[in-house]
Length: 249
Ligand code: 13P
Image (cartoon, rainbow, N blue to C red; front, side, top):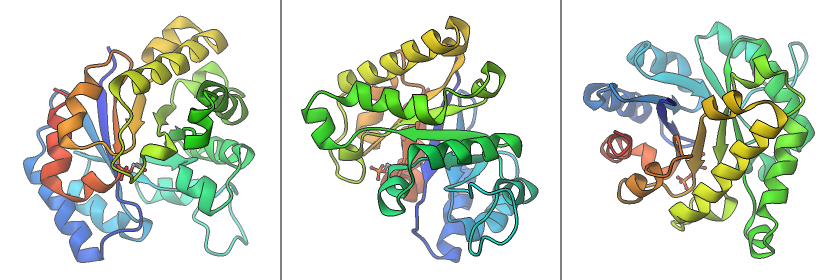
């Protein structure tokens, strides 16, 4: 049985005091019985947030370097993240792919670094609107899986969490219908079964991301292949974020 994971990606929002307040509010109100919570704060606040949440809420990085260590000005490595107590890292978020030119190859390198530092990678994939209009979304996502994840051994792959985030649903208020999301999640799970085996596919958590709110979460979470959410805007308010989490009960 896959435990649902509700993850908040704070992106480049919030000043330090607001970030700490938000973490405190999540901790005060969050009852972590039936699901797991994770937050991905701005990297510079990770230490302070870890002090607030301790181990109750998982804390992840929104990005990490594809390099191991050395002269890479401005980059934070997976080993540095691990040494700071971070447990997870996103890789391949569409904003990084589009705004910072991250290719499937770069995402693959990041996945490898995240795994070798002992962190859990949250691999983000998803198609643009033109791709969906052309009904090419399955091929697109399959290629992302093939080029960034499917080189992994079964043992490493089993540590990966996948987040399907159609680009047309991110920050737009246009959420994928439960049917659209479920079809893609089922497709991804079938590809995992074909590449690895049925047990690996069955245990892989596949989150949905893109305009998830308290009022659409329940319908998404009731789909058999949707194992939680990666939430952007709605994770910036503790009440809304926890209402989404409670929809996973
Ligand atoms: P929104 O929930 O704001 O659409 O963002 C989704 C996202 O990009 C999470 O990583």
